[in-house]
Amino acid sequence: MMLSSRETSFPPAGSSGTAVACRNESATLSPVTEMEPRQNSGSASATRISALDFTKGTLVLVMVLYHWLNYFVGPQGSYYRYLSFLPPSFICITGFLISHVYLSRYRITDPKLPRRLAIRGLKILAIFVALNVIISVVVPRNGRTIFDMLSPASLWSVYVSGNMTGGRVVAFYVLVPISYVLVLSAGILVVCRYYRYAFHVATAVALLGIFAMSMDGKKSQNLDLLAVGLLGISIGYIPIERINRWLKRSYLVVLAYLLYLAAITVWNVPYPLQVTGVLLTLMVIYLVGMASGDSSKASQTLIRLGKYSLFGYIAQIAILQILRRLLPMELAAWELVLSFLGAAALTVVSVETVDVARVKVPFVNRIYAAVFS
Image (cartoon, rainbow, N blue to C red):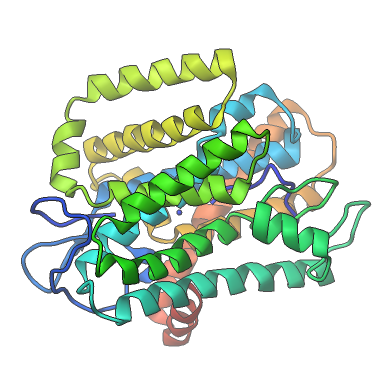
């Protein structure tokens, strides 16, 4: 289950009221599985926001396409520019969930909040390390350089710069910046007790750092993705009701998205356009989710995928790797189409299976909660 450096993809809901920089209202303390989005209903029981789960589920399916292209078509191609929004989209949503879920469930002074974020971030980082250790043991090299956990060059490229070069390959890379967003947020929350705009300042500092590095001809993939996560946190302070009202001007969102597509067609995808694409694409998918509701079977499938986005991310890579090894290297056009449809269907089936197993088998639910929540 090895990924090239191109495969760097990977994943709120808010409460009513005015937007504030660091929320301090009291809330329930129940754990949020896979950072699930909920909207406040004035009581302890809250429901998920279906449109946001729909958005995450759609991204999982687009991720299958992204990785399918990489495995079955090739890692190079101009079409990748139109999928450049995907890797940072999950990072942005992760940040959005932090401010829209966690900050609405804990008091800002509650030590449980930074501890929970830090533990979750370290757990995701541990999942990344464990998966790569397993891969390095069970997957043949096939002429490719496998991620060496003890190589200083690999350690630097993966954990510091995020710039995988020189043939180094790593699986599930996007889990690294996601874990960084969670752990860094835990620290910023402590500062937020004394200065409520701490996240906004951190976002500005990260973006200025990226600009300064670009002026010097340097780039850090980890910093790029971390900044998107912090931007998601800052946006997450806006109440979901206000976002929904603004998005009713759907024609403006669609027009902006079309202009974005035209821009990347001409100029490729510099970082400012990539961030713009992340925000616009998420808004477009969210709009479709709001219009679709949750009554149709297709919507319910996407919503369920969204609830299990982290598991779906891992499962679809495993599925694509298996298909790539089972199928011939040269495939006819109709075989390529079937391979993609099969990968998407198997990803959905794997999520559906886990969802049912969690209900019917308590042991499975305990294992899932221990790993993914």
